[in-house]
Image 1 (cartoon, rainbow, N blue to C red):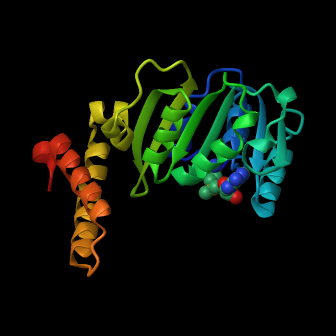
Image 2 (image 1 turned 180 degrees about the vertical axis):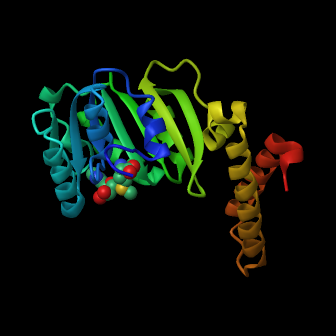
Image 3 (image 1 turned 60 degrees about the horizontal axis):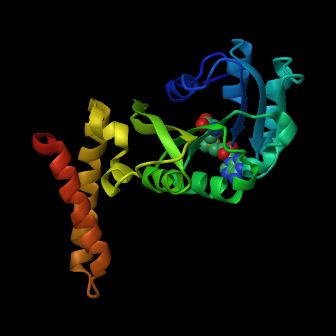
Length: 235
Ligand code: SAM
């Protein structure tokens, strides 16, 4: 991957960034996403936020190499504190991290959100906890995507703040409201794997001397949900 040729994962993320967006890419590492979009002329302005010095310097180099310092500001900052009111950010991408970390970034930085930003989130794991945060904070999920690249499965969640008339239920939080409707081949593959993994963990917990009964009950419920959704696809 480089700024000219994004990974499939980031290409799919970029599909949800609207033309002329003012983007904040949080956890921007090499700033590949904002640089690629700026080179294509599809965004107006970007902030690339990075909390770690090494990736921050890589992002700075990338922006300088492509002569985009007047259009992309790279900031060494924790989470959403990279965003300043004068940036007038309307789109935030947080990609390539665990769902819990993305949730933490949103929680700790919520005072940097005006409420009109589109959030495009790409958790590597822990999607349910992220959907739970969105649900609790009145963000409606507008789109979801699941894809496979280099034998890894990724999800993308697109959300905007709205007055929610109906909240997501437990199964929608677990599987993703759109993904569970679509049930594409990657989704089925993911949940076939998860089913086997949960079964393995459940077996270990049931063999423990002090069985964690609440955890066991949760895992059993999850297995039932997966069985119910996948039906004959369970292997
Ligand atoms: N977003 C890029 C992508 O999807 O390819 C880079 C993903 S990289 C695995 C995650 C990056 O997030 C790392 O460079 C890490 O330093 C950065 N990061 C982690 N926590 C952060 C935080 N609280 N604020 C800003 N950046 C963070």
